[in-house]
Length: 186
Image (cartoon, rainbow, N blue to C red; front, side):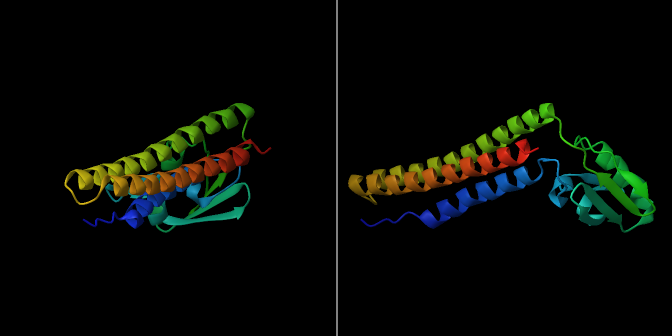
């Protein structure tokens, strides 16, 4: 009657949810240039949609400027159009095969709006972590029901799963707090 749940797997899956949250936060504009800002942008080239980083090299030459060196000059206008239509509120400027994107100052209103978006992303991260916890708890209950573990063991393992979940939720909250500070900095 010895069943050991795979806590490493649960921890790994919860960490995956947090990594996803970090990526989401990386795409939130904070008034400072970051290559991750344009990661979600897809460009229509060669008859299909491609991520921007597969069409050119994204660099950050200055704190308030992104630069994209487009590899094929035929794709420059497509890159510029994709950035304008991305909903990021950016206005690219083309210079030959280089697309420069000045990052404007954030208004107070936009900062508050970004804070709300950050809260939404964090809540999605918490939900993902809780879903992993629910899956782990269901496995423990099933193992107890099937006779693979005692009720006491099930309770002990449930406490372990809850402890891991609490740590990961705390990590999500810390990430949110840091992102809010970053957004609200003037």
